[in-house]
Length: 69
Image (cartoon, rainbow, N blue to C red; front, side):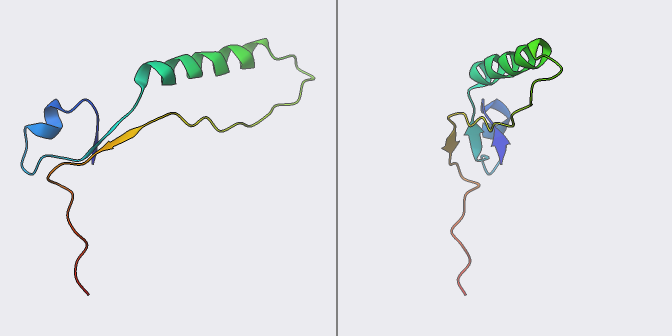
């Protein structure tokens, strides 16, 4: 499995399954987290937060059916 965009993923055989990720949104979120950390006062409590961004699985020829038992 690779990451999107596909040029390397589609030039090999079998074509690789990839995940399309919103790179710009991930960058913006990272900058916001960094700035929040820089601006945080020393006596403030840190809060751990998960950031989930939209993504899409792009299935190609490298996806196979599970083996029969």
